[in-house]
Image (cartoon, rainbow over the protein chains, first blue to last red):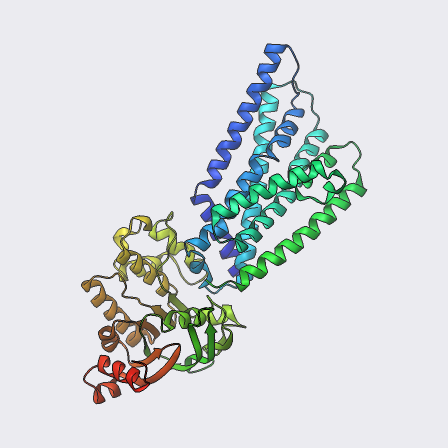
Length: 250
Length: 244
């Protein structure tokens, strides 16, 4: 456990020191400010209500879950794996008394921590903007539901990160991994529209599963089915990615 | 826990690449406190052997034991007493020299800030501790790599071309450091180099590797009794095996 803790802390420190975390925070803030300016513009220009304090964080989530969050996840994940493979930096950790499984798990956990932190920051910033600039229409229960929607959104992003880790272990070049992941992401989005009967199986469809948690009565059958699918994908992707990471020569 | 007087045991170690190069059926035993020199021309298999010894590559066959612990099955235990510098000294370019060592110190509960300062001083890097390696010369990177290798006070040091990029002064300092650590702290060294003169001056036992196989292993003292220099011995060994 001590070796895992050391590897995990190191991964977090590397993430923080590379300033990717701060860039993500800054862009998140920009997205929220831009969103809020649009809402204020609609309200004063067209006389429409726009959104209430409660709807604003949901509006932000619906936008970022399909745009900047997958992008940040991709950049951090690729840097964490392909970046270290290409510059031989993985050797620094691999030659320490820590197993490859612990190194791999520490990296995955650090990426998951980044995703959760990013989601929580987005929630706090959008909630704050919602309170300050929009009509107050919220209760404690509705806020807790929105917080839950943000938190459950981490799960499909974890899957995306695992898919990227798998790609990073197959494709040598980090830039190629990035472009392959963008193409794959767009292909899955397109397949979701063109083959709508199979869209439930696609990873990109799960990005919207937070909507299930916003319903007045939670549709447990759908929630459990999607959770089961994501869990299955997660186990398969983790196993395949670790297999390649473990077999690799450094 | 040290449960064997053999510091390193290499048994039938084999790793062959698609191009046919690599190492084939390597067998070696290094005693505790020895400074073992691994001599061989470029492409002979020195780095491959050292990578297999430190778990960076998985061998096709065979095993390496460090103080009795298998690198294949008991990796964490085997590496707990090992410091290494393989191929090139790598460091995170976005972290300062100090932060680079701090990150690596986390794996060793006994290593504190005092020890980090000590190794930086030993390698002549203390005055650059707040600078980032992206601005370092090859020699400075090498010194930082060596500082990282000796950080945990390991009982075994595996160094692949440790004098790479060092100036004459740096080479002499490094040679003295190796001798001092071997004599005072009984550290076992496994050093690969193509600089035969340096191997002659530093190592107590020498193994010659050629084309992925060990040609001979002998004590430096014995070699110098029979040959004018280690270089003559090396050429003779390679010739005797009909490979030159």
